[in-house]
Amino acid sequence: HSSTWIEGNLLSLAQVRAVVDGRDLLVEEKQKTEVANCVGAMRQILKTKRKPVTEQGLLAVHARMIKGLLSKDQTGQYRSVQNHIVDARNKVIFTPPPPAQVPGRMKALFAWAKDESLHPVIRSAIFQHEFLTIHPFVDGNGRVGRAVGQWFLWEKGFDPLCTLGLDDFFAQDRPRYYDMIQQTRDMDGDFTHWVEYVAEGLAWAHDDVQKRIKAGTLSLQGASLTPKQEELLGILEKKGVLGASEIGKTMKVNRARVNQLISPLVRLGIVTREGAARAVRYRLNEE
Image 1 (cartoon, rainbow, N blue to C red):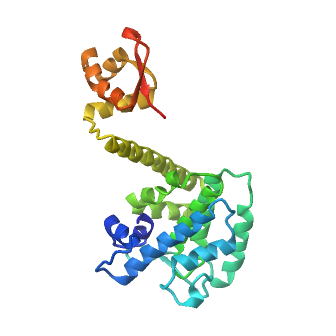
Image 2 (cartoon, helix red, strand yellow; image 1 turned 180 degrees about the vertical axis):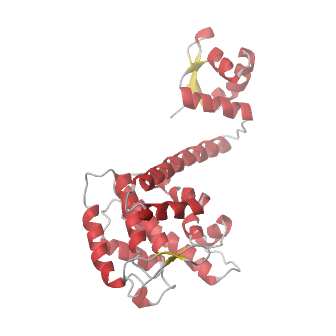
Image 3 (cartoon, helix red, strand yellow; image 1 turned 135 degrees about the vertical axis):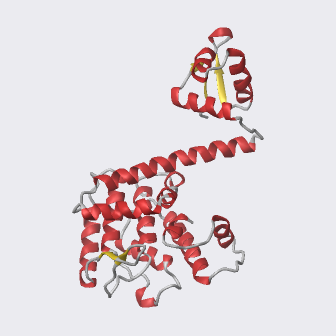
């Protein structure tokens, strides 16, 4: 949903789910095709996620991502025309290399990506940025670039569950996403801020997954937390193992109120109680 939305697709998350489920929608056919193709391309990558990213693999991802949206000679093929990057006012802000340079630039990029000494996040981030700068296809560059950026992480063992939210991070502040891409170009290829930005996004995506899992677990258990209980869980998550008096001081409540808040969490298995009497300590159950 987020990757296609970044590129201007207007379908809501609920509509995207309907497309994935095969239900019919009264919306523009192109919008549905973009979403279905993006889901199909990501599933295609996931089937072989531990295999190295290759140029042939990238072309196959583009072919799946853009299926039915471009002519056959432009699907899974590098562009043969000049393209331009424009801003919201349709003003050209960047011109990618001419089409004659694209194959050589892409081969050089894949040769660089073979450097195993780089941290996977750095390798993924820089590859994605350089890919977007080359802009090798007539259309679909953003979607393919973000998808292959994920693939570089998955081949090194990153859990897709914890990285797919990176597109959500980009989408929640789309102007910043585009500004960060252009800023790196303006800085003559200093990737420092771009890599930090992608790393920030991955950390955000990981935290978001943790919150969703916790919320889903509580829902399955039939639990509904109060704001104070959420605050208490946040304190334990941050500080680790604490006694009731320490929790009370942090939350500015008495010991009886701490027991009132934490007892249901212990019964549900969300919090573990250790020790006895006044020596009792509490921690989050990580099992």
